[in-house]
Amino acid sequence: MRGQRRRTVAILTLVWVVGMATACSKVTAGVPVADPDASVRPEVSNEPVELTVSSFGEFGFDALLEEYQRQHENVTIRHDRTTDSASYLPKLQASLAAGTASDVVAIDDFGMAALLDQPDLFADLAEVGPDDVSAERWLDWVHKGGIAPEGTWVGYGVDIGPTAMAYRTDLFAAAGLPTEPSEVAALFESWDSYFSAGDRYVQATGKPWFDSSAQVFTVMHNQLETGYFDEDGALVIESNQRIKANWDQVTAAAGRGQSAKLPAFMPEWISGLGKPSFATMPAPYWMLGLIEAHGGPSNAGKWAVAPAFPGGSANWGGSYLAVPAQGEHPEEAAALAAWLTAPEQQLTAFETASVFPGQVEALESSTLRGATKDYFTGEKTAGVYAELATKVPVPRQPGARSGEVQQQAVVPALQAVDTGLPPDQGWQQAVTQAKQVAGR
Image (tube, rainbow, N blue to C red):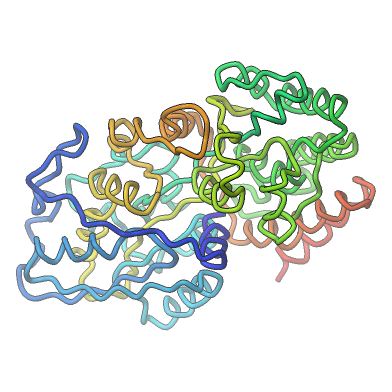
């Protein structure tokens, strides 16, 4: 859902201030900043090079790219950044097909699911990338998310979307539930315990437990090793019993009054953050900004995140940098991508643009671990997410049309169930529409 996050942030005009990159001679929160030339292969030329970078939304790249050019006087970079995230992937696919793509391109998690099936469009970073950049830079599931089925290293991980459960402390107190994050964690140990707590909440208050069935189902689905498509690219939504079990569990909870039936990111959902209209919601790190922006000052200190998530954790969002194969300077482009995705640069992006890193050293740094969100109760909010990131069970599932199945088939069917369609009929609607999407 990184693309959806990008679109939402653009639509809601949440502006992040981009700061300057850390100088190469400094140490950032115990993480030594690398020699700017250390990640450049010996064969990379010192002749003048012009590189183009394409991205969407806000990665915190502008200041970093300026810093890179100061450190590499022979390199000139043009940054083509769009705020129209919805049109970014189709334009990228068209430019890849035409051989006109930028030297370095950002790709969100849905885009990676689509483009990993076409690895020939990209240079293999294992071949053109800096020798000192290894898989160990990233969490294992992050690295694997950038590897094509046949083994091509397509993308260096930029950011991730580890997911916590956000909850309203005042609503929990009114329902007789614990409010301290350490105590609430026991309610979120599993999906069974989460929905059981939801039943207690509904019985005590008569109010909804979560925002919508689609939001909860999405994070449950992101925990599956095999999603809508199997490793061979075959649609398995109908035969994958885990998907159906998740559907049954979520829709049953909704039938017991747990869903607020608010489509995510729509006006009624936005206003629901401030009323409030629900007590819990799955919240990747990027979601916290939306909660604060639309919860409003009157709700400051009433939201918290628990240090536990059903099923361990889930990833919801994230992106990669890739080097299209048609570029004239693949080694130089890969060196730039490697530098941008190094821990020290991603810590800068975290501090200035709230981009949550997927690099091991960045996640272990005191800069990140000690970061707080004043709007939320409890301390070291980012540290909670850093721990949950290590518990994400799987990278994003393969399948060129996974995102389309999710958005065009499953989400609409779950919204229909929330508003009265029987769950079995909703399931058949989802399966039928998924087959149409996959068959296009």
